[in-house]
Image (cartoon, rainbow, N blue to C red; front, side, top):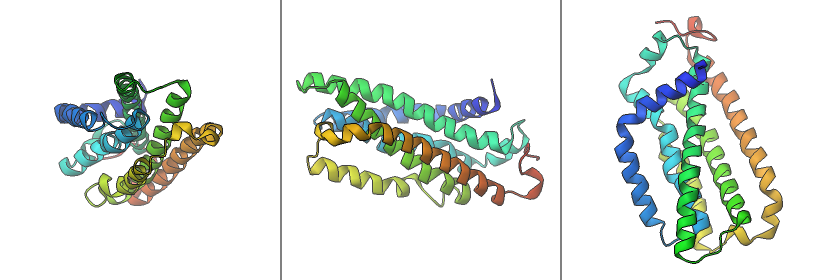
Length: 219
């Protein structure tokens, strides 16, 4: 297992004590989304659940002072940073699986058509929202710390956009031109995350004292 995977696993262990709260939140969101359009279920979960789960290791590390722990682990600063992004991607994947199953269940319950194009559109929109959210959040968390930049503050504008779409009854699955742009949105999401990693890496280097830049953190 490489260093990035070990850091992502460490993040999993860090947030594991909060799994019950996470499951309760998922259940509440599932109930609240039961009567909405199935195609909006996964995007809503990504904004309201995945964004919080991805940021959770930052919150715990900030409150518990885990930077000291990271400093004595055989992990480079870059591995710690990349591990955070790997954890975020794993959180998105888990949400995508659960959210898709939930959307299919709701579509079946309400006798709403839910074909492959609808699924692809839902996944693409969710990916774009996730990538944009993480791309904005993570460099800010790394530069200023979670306590100074909450996840809610960065996700709220995106959430308002999605609420506006729902209230205007714009069913994205029926907008034909959007189908053409789906590959572009996937590529744009990857580009946004890559740019975010580059900015976060540069920010982390400036934030750290000289002796621990680019290498294993020293106690």
